[in-house]
Amino acid sequence: MKSFTFFLMVLWGALAFYTGYVVVNDGLNLFPAFFGDMAEWTWPGQFNFDFMIMLFLSACWTLWRNGPNAAGILLTVVAFFGGAGFLLPYITYLSWKHDGDFTAVLLGRHAKDTAL
Image (cartoon, rainbow, N blue to C red; front, top):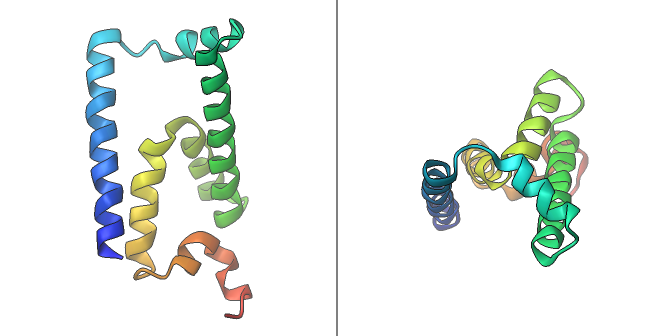
């Protein structure tokens, strides 16, 4: 389990480095480029639309896992807009919090309802 969480942190570090490089060179003006590609109906737009659906699924899982309370809704918004920049450290934290029990990591508040 420790190797998996280490791998998640390596991915997060690589993403942070890549993101930092892009921000330095292109600035923080992400949304016009992201939605502009989708508006052109090209392969980059298709990829962005696919990615946006994955962000939506990540946000849905986050809300389902945590419940519709203030913290759950806040984490859901961060999951949607943060992408892997949120999900990688969040899953790492949950893995540590639940001592590697991935049933608890994935199911959250629903874990007690399962009988393994």
